[in-house]
Structure formats: structure tokens, C-alpha cells
Length: 72
Image (cartoon, rainbow, N blue to C red; front, side, top):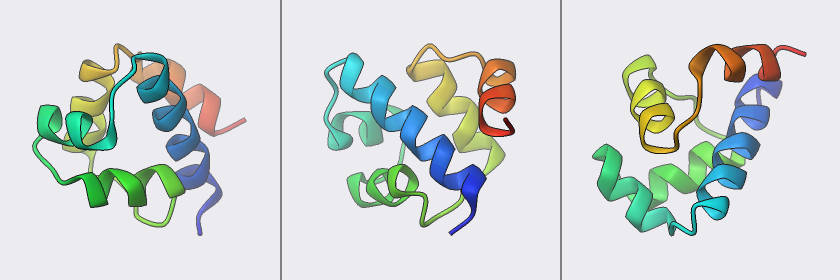
């Protein structure tokens, strides 16, 4: 597992839970499956840029802040 993917997954999971969304609800909003959201949150699958930006939009996250956070 890539450390960046793991950290990004932790951020996505925390924000999803803060917003009280299930993995299935989030998946529906960004056009993927709940299983994919599970893998992204675990850090076992990397995100495409387009999905990264969709997730940032839905979860109200700033992509620039995320980039700073995951590369610390």
C-alpha cells in the first residue's frame, strides 16, 4: 500500500462519516460503487484524478489542502 493512498483514504473516510454518508450514498454521488469507496478508504486502490476531484466536490474538501495533508 502507498502511504499517500492510505492517508487520502483516511481523510475521505473521516469526512464521509462527518457528513453522515454511507459508502453507498457517497458512491452514488460520485458515480462509482460502494466497494470502490471501501478500497479507496482502505488505501488499497488509488484514485483517478477525475474521481479525486468529484470526491473533493461532494465532500466539500479543498484539493490543495488535501495535497498538503497527504504529503506531510
